[in-house]
Length: 130
Image (cartoon, rainbow, N blue to C red; front, side, top):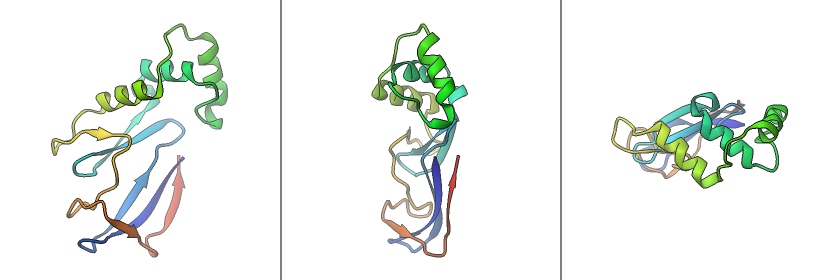
């Protein structure tokens, strides 16, 4: 499950929104240069996602437990490690318009100055999403 919260840049005081994590059916990546976000569904990922599920000992999440179990039991493809899976997802997402690479572990950045140094905005709210 992902979350959305308000943030304030400690460098330039810009107020912005930070989305963290994906959901039950998608991943959220960020550009490693500018911080822009990009989501990709497990359906779009396709074969690599099935290979990753095949290698898991437990469901990816409780919401997909039955589906994941069926994949583990019936999928004939070779399992994929977490690192191999992350590399495949990042390759599928490609380059950002700024020239950076979309990464699963890229930090949130201020959209104005691109600083990674920010704090939570107490008035910015907080929500969880799928």
